[in-house]
Length: 386
Ligand code: GDP
Image (tube, rainbow, N blue to C red; front, side, top):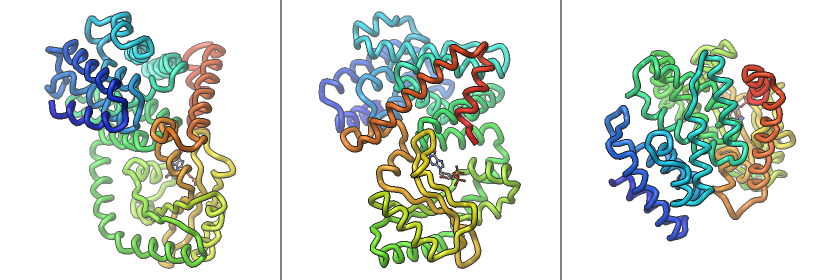
């Protein structure tokens, strides 16, 4: 299969040869175990674990996690046991597969109960190892990408669960790309018409605004250079769901939301962040009350940046995020930075440890909660602090 060859080629670029050999053998084992099973799309079942592994390989996850990703459905869907996996691929891989399988074994009485139970089981399974949740999120992402083959009612249920549970967890772990994609896919399947209208409007507006974005970007870049600040300035695209959310929460019309331009400034150190802020506020007037210092006070997921909104010469608001390269990596990849940028900054290691501690503290509150609904309330406060 072409996809498998592509994957192994990618894996060879960062894993040891013996790890790639183990992964090839896990692939053949999984393929044989799923033989005769098909996805709703009609594809052979192995295409799913393969795609999930591909997503995790992009995060540069280690060989154990990738092996578990290839095997993540064999305990649930075939006769393969945990002991068998342990003897063939080692105990850590068997534990990971078991953790993911536990999350899959869920039946619910009501929607609220389902949500609460889902979270509870997820946390129990991942408390020992963040990698379990990364595999589960990649699994959900691929299922969401292929959701159109599923019957409409089930599709909506899965989309809602993704929007209410999996996307916020991806956000809490700082996995920004996965968070955004899960939200957009959920929105698309929950409200197909609204999605279509908005996506089309966003595409049209994008073309119209290209010129003004390029102009502001060049001006900013020039002013920062004159002030002796090394900086990269980028224009920022908004995702469909975040536009929809902003319209609803702030009662804004589509054109009001789209009028807001977004930029990102990447500089070399923290001092330069504040210097760049000064240059920006000297150039364009800031809107009072919009400045946020998430460098001094990071978000719970480790996110750091300076946020400000200023008025462009045309009177339209411009949202600017200013951050260092390390902050940018954490903003994009969150806890996965630990694997992606292995050898570099201590910040990534610290974030991984902090995430682990968060999961542990949730577990404590889990044991103190009387029932899963009460626990869910507690967790929501944690996931949606604002
Ligand atoms: P505020 O209104 O300035 O406090 O910021 P918001 O929380 O409304 O976020 C505004 C923008 O900042 C978002 O659209 C994102 O681009 C970015 N942002 C905020 N929080 C996070 C985060 O946790 N991770 C990442 N990657 N970006 C974030």
